[in-house]
Image 1 (tube, rainbow, N blue to C red):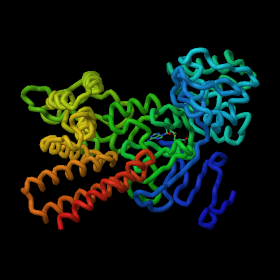
Image 2: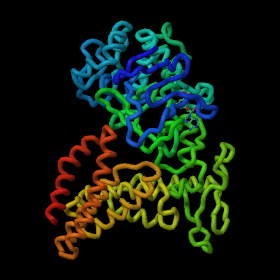
Image 3: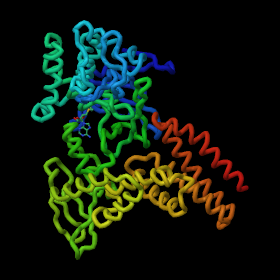
Image 4: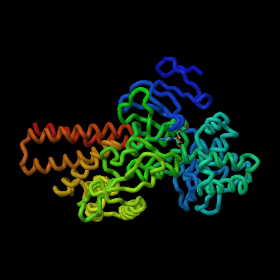
Length: 497
Ligand SMILES: C[S@@+](CC[C@H](N)C(=O)[O-])C[C@H]1O[C@@H](n2cnc3c(N)ncnc32)[C@H](O)[C@@H]1O
C-alpha cells in the first residue's frame, strides 16, 4: 500500500502483519534470531525525537483483576455507581456508557447473549472483560483480529506454568458461565491471555487498564533503553520518544519493566513474565555499567566491605551462579544473596517517614553498596520527601535538610543519568535555589557568585522541563514549572544585577 505522509512525501507502508515489514520515515522492522521481530532506526535519530505515535488497538480493565472497574474508563468502583442503561454493567458516569469499546463491542453483545454483571463488586468475572472484548474483534473487526493474532503469545512456554490455570478460569467464565463456547475456542482464549501478558501495556494512574499497541509492542527490551514511552489515556495513544541519540540501524529499545531493580530481579522477572533471558550490556556486566546497582558488601570481618557480585552473568545456564567478593574471594550462594535482598526490600516498602528512611539507610551501609538498588530506592523517595512531605515542605526545610536533599538528588541523578534520566533534576534545582536564597539572606555570598549558582540551577530546571514535556503525565508539571518556578527564578537572577 502506498500512502501520502502529512508532509506530502510518498511513504511506503507495508503491512507488517502480512509480510513482517513495517516502515515509517524513521523506523523499519527487522528480525533477529534472539529478539524475533524488532524495530530499528532507518537513519540517525536525535535525542528527544518523537519516533512513534500509535492509537490503541483494544483496551479493557486489567486482566484477572477481581475488583469491579468501570466498564468505560476502568477506574475502580465503590458501592455508589451507575449501571449502563442498556446492559446494566457497572459504570462511573453517563459518559462512560458511550465509551468507544463498550458501546462498539460488548454492550449490545451483553444484551444479546443475556450476560449480566456479577452481584458483588469483587468477582473474577471483571477480570475476564478485556479478554472477551478482545475476542469480539474476531466478529466485529476481523482485520484487527488478524493483526492481534500476529503478536507473540509464547503459549508453548506458558502451557507448563501455573498461570495457564488463570487462563483456564477465563476460559470457564467465557465458554461456560457466559455460554460462549459456540463462538470462541479454548485456544483462542489462551492466545488472547498470552498476547496481553507478552505485549500488553498497563495504562492509567493505577495501571488498571490493559491495552494493546501492536506496532509499539514490536520494540525490543533493554535494561538501558534508548526510548521511553508515554501514554495519553484521554485519546488512547502511546508515544515513543528517543531518550538518547540513536544510530542508524540500531534497534529501538524500551524497558518493559523493573528498570530500577538489580539484574537478578530484572532477569528473573523477564524470564517469568516475558519468556526471555535478557542479555543486554547492563545485564551482562556484574557492576551494571559502573552503577553497582546489584553490588552487596562482603561480611567477612577481615575484608572490610569488599564488593560482592555474581561470578558469571552471561548465559541462562548461569542464572543461579555463586557470587564472590572481589577483594577476599569469599563465595556467597545466590540463594543467600536473594534472601538478603528480599528481606531488605520488604522492610524498605514499609517505611513511611523521612526519619525511618534515613535510619534504614544507616542500616544498609554495612550490607549494600551505597548505589545498590535497595538504598537507591529509599534515596530516590527521600529526594521527593524533603521539600514536599509534612514538616519538610520547601519553605519549612532547614539549611541542613536542603543540603541533604541536594546531596541525595546528586547521588540519585548520577545513577539515573546512566539508567534513566528524569525528574530528579527538578528536585535538585529546587534545593539549590532554596539554599541560594538562605545564603543570600545571610550575606555570605557575593552577588556575582550567587548569579552564577542560580544560572546553573536555571539550566537544570530547563533540562528538567524538556524531560517533563516529553512525557504526558509530566506535561502539567512542565507547564507549571515554566509558568511559575522558571519565571520566579529568572526574576530572582535579574534582581541580583
Ligand atoms: C513484546 S514482544 C516484542 C516483539 C517480538 N520480538 C515479536 O517478534 O513479536 C516481546 C517478546 O520479544 C522477545 N524479546 C524482546 N526483547 C528481547 C530481548 N532483549 N532479548 C530476547 N528476546 C527479546 C521475547 O520473546 C519477548 O517475549
